[in-house]
Length: 98
Image 1 (spheres, helix red, strand yellow):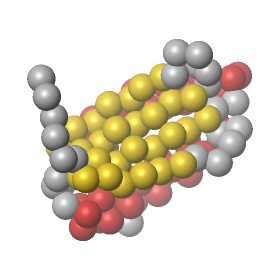
Image 2 (cartoon, helix red, strand yellow):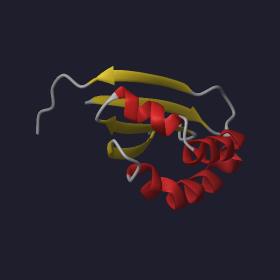
Image 3 (cartoon, one colour):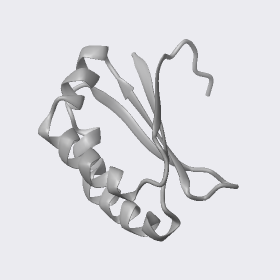
Image 4 (cartoon, one colour):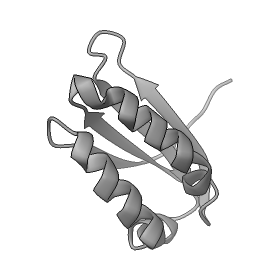
């Protein structure tokens, strides 16, 4: 399993539109084959900065998602709300404590 972390910075006036749009797509993203977990975070100080954390069974599953019509639709809509370049990391999950 590995984790995909995406940092997104939004135009403040477009945050509510982003949140409303994400609400309509989150179950489709989470339900995509290979996606095992999805969360959305908001920075406490810079409230126009958000992060998604998604867990994927394999890199090929993320690649399939990134080449899907769902991703293309979601990303093309979401990027209209940005005020800065997004950043993304793929990391291996080494440990989790509960």
